[in-house]
Length: 152
Length: 164
Image (tube, rainbow over all chains, first blue to last red; front, top):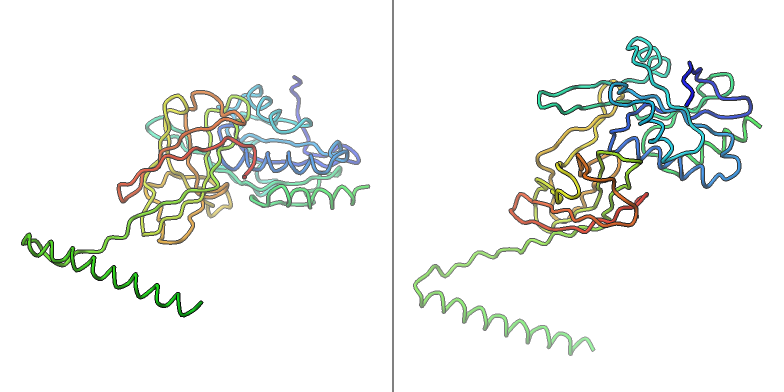
């Protein structure tokens, strides 16, 4: 596994689908990733022009290995992005107007909240689409097809 | 056709009245209160249930379902056997002012009489915490629901990778 700085830019002729989340997420993250998986399956061959970037908002509990295993359950082409530098994570969130917060309770439980919007980024590094949570595989398929056609 | 139907209805009605009278007289004879309260039996229907299969060796999971009660009631808890998960809570996913989404445990979920209350992705869900082992596609887990009325119901929830 290579570890290196990552620019949130899609390779030429491709789309980068970026999402903020954490692997202990029971509802929002698995749902979004499963929807993306289903959408890519429906798109077929063109899905080779799509890669997913998952940025963890919980770097303390989400190790690179854990994130890699998690993403691999959903998609083939992905990047797991993790930084323990609080400032760097804040900058990343700000760039996408995303937000997240972690609250540790007295009983040891951890509550995490995060923006559940998915961002589609092009080869220029521009966010060309923001997909709100809950659109389902249909919503992802719809938008991905439109933008894949647009970049041809 | 119509005529026969009408006759049949009246006949049944007549029998019912007779039966009621008998009961009433029974209670009167016993000296107990003749006015009996009519109690509507609570029926809770759960359908469309599913739990998402775990990505890798996840430690948390979520189960979803639609619950309809014929009388006003509340969902106050859920539980699974220890062989599935150590802790189970009913949660609600909410959106904060800054646009981020999180979830919180809710102690009581209203079930309005006759209305379908949906537990679905992005909304209410049953959170399974400290999973004993990952939820595997194809298996079934038993979830016991507890209601404010005191009723409980065991639901066999299939593990799927998308809503049924």
